[in-house]
Image 1 (tube, helix red, strand yellow):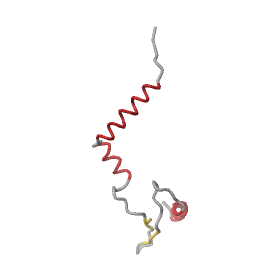
Image 2 (spheres, rainbow, N blue to C red):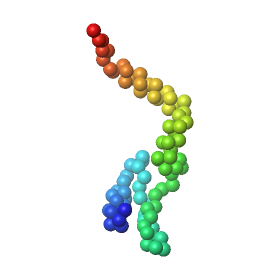
Image 3 (cartoon, one colour):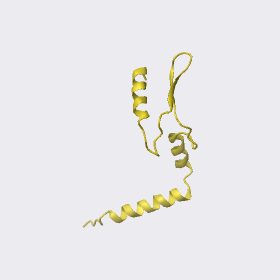
Image 4 (tube, one colour):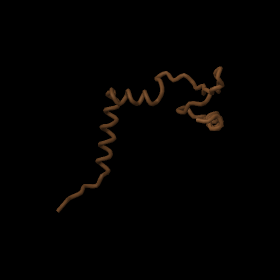
Length: 83
């Protein structure tokens, strides 16, 4: 990503104010002047890895949630009869 685009993105991230969205702490430049975004520590790691791990090892709660969602979905589908 070009520097200008990264800076524009960081300005947007500075305005994030939601409990489920990480805000930007700052920007750091390494000795070669490559920018790095500073984000809060994520106890469960990054979102991509967290979701991957949950998919591989779904908990009992995850399975119950899926069952309820499927039941509600099938309940809302009208019964179709073929003649």
